[in-house]
Amino acid sequence: MNKFKKIYCGASFVFACIVIVFTITLSFANPVTTYAASSKSGKSTQSDNRDVADALGDNTNGLSITYNNDSGSISTPVRMLLILTVLTLAPSILIMMTSFTRIIIVLHFVRTAIGTQTAPPNQILIGLALFLTFFIMWPTFQKINTNAIQPLDKGEITQSEFWQEAEKPIREFMIKDAKIQIRDVNLFAEISGQTYEDTDELSDVSFTTLVPAFILSELRKAFIMGFLIYIPFIVIDMVVSSVLMSMGMMMLPPTTISLPFKILLFILADGWNLVIGSLVHTFY
Image (cartoon, rainbow, N blue to C red; front, side, top):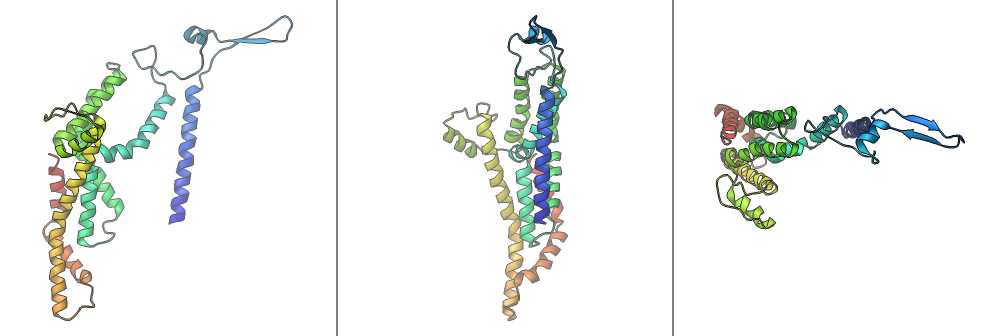
């Protein structure tokens, strides 16, 4: 299995490098018309790109990107390069600024508390956490699309205004929906030497301070929920251990006997409904 993983990772890396190099090559491959004239002696040749010379003057090297406010728009190869860059950073963005962190940690606590080592497997937990994240974050994504992406595509706002409009829904989610804790904001504001007004919007707090404070707040809330999930299953382990010791079966592992009772308790209590419902409602 490790051998296949290494082969897959190597092939993916090579493919990504090829795509990036191909995209960069296309972005610079702008066909031009050249006009050549030989001197009387036949020893020298001149190349004159009239269109490029009129547009750029003497400096014809470099990459220029314009979008709707100028005479052109972002070319398709450059769009591909930007999309690949965003896809590379997507996992970090998903973990840092969405509900994914809290959900995946709580789901792992559930599996560990029950005692099933690989059931459900990691792929199922990550997939469930991803879809729950999209479900919770969908209103935020819609606001970003309406207020930032569509106006930028129509040329109504600049790129700097795009980042400002895209930041507002994410900031609103972290402060109001996820209910970021003020003590975490104070911690990172103190470390960075930043001062802000203590308001509900936290408008004076920079985004670079708000994001790590949000991650720390999510970790704290996830561990609190994990502690509450552990309590009933620990009670079952203690009861089973006491019964086995009273019967003289000290060599029999208590976890082997308690596992079916844990699963039965989780089924009778409709555990998945309770856990998922509680997780989703913590963001509303």
